[in-house]
Length: 586
Image (cartoon, rainbow, N blue to C red; front, side):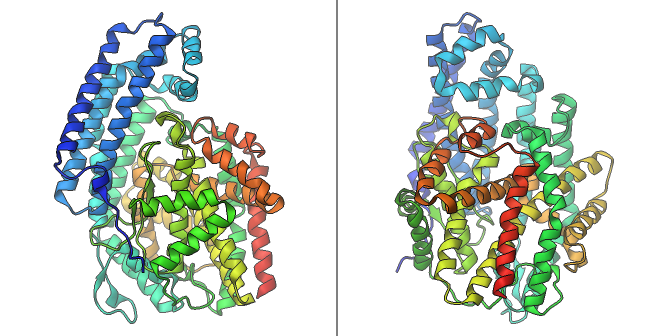
């Protein structure tokens, strides 16, 4: 019987080990050696020298990624470990210093005249996209000394605030006696949230009430952290870097035209009634008036516990039915002891896949509680992991997909698992239950995330205009009211939901990438259903591109159209079909 695993970070470093100390010293040496290029930079630098310079810069970043990645993973496995927290803070400061040491190249490269830059890009074709993207940021780049100040300020400013948010929220414990049938013990957030998918209405309600009871206690403090982080974002990016809007920073980083994102959010807002129709259908099927507590209620009880071994088998078999290569890459992460799924006190909540270097297996963190939802989380994160492995032939700067494409393999992995479970369903009721799950997920990934993004846009403006934390909470509650209209009953505690969403603290305007990824995958899935096995190499080729080209270019080469309203409406057509199929089964 396979036990629920915990990863082995000793494959990177052991705390205070000679290897760790040696690599920290080696990073200083590499940075100092690269700094000598400052005296050699000139507009007439030879293509051969430029190629060597870029390769040397990648080597510095590779070692930096390994060291900072180790710090992040050590903190994630136990956010209450004071040594891990101190080492992460030390690495944050070291990375800021390193960024300042290397900054001279970025400034020089952005300011180089185009007629001088073009032949250098031609001499380093493997790095061409990264080099062009870097130059595209020239209008938003400060003079070198100012950039250095910003880098140093972030360590003790915004980044320290976010680390504080993580430390506060990851130490929260929730009392199960607030849940009917609870035994009074304290549990983590991940363990508590299993109950929101219970078949018992009062268990679902109790879990949500307890979650937001705890968050509401610190709501004013967490809200102040958010306000300060938003002000910092705005001061740097609007006043200093002269972006048009707070969200334009993310669009530029994602290399997406703002019009594509605006079209996505517009369509998501217009199609919100489609999810309302689903919620009303769910209420009828469950014979209840649907409350926000009941959003993820199953059609039938899901009391069966799935062992970790069986869960792994389900996911790997689903991947293998699509492509043996997909199964092989996913299994390598678990077999390579890069997978942490064991519930542990202090462990960072949620789930993630950390792809550190092209040459290394990625690291996956989740908490496995034996529920069906855990299988989908596993499929999602292992999908991220196989995505990065398929892109391993790229250099470090082209290895990671931009955020909008980063959810492609993960979400497609969930679809593969759902398809497997649907085909094995023994009755119409089981199939209906699976469609309920898929539509729940469609709302959570498309509708919910799009409205998060709309709230972020509103919140940034409100904070600029002096809004209080209570006013932000009221605005979020109104955001929910617009989503659900007359289909779902809301209660007051959900006004604090926004302070429990780490993404809006960590990575402003990240969340629309989830909506983007899900709707994109629906388009890809339609092609897979039409083409069958012939589609496998097309998706594999798309994923293998990593972040080596603009998202629109990668999608166009995969046969997908422009990212306009028609494109996004196409994804909602898949949701409409699922809803039609569900009605036929009920």
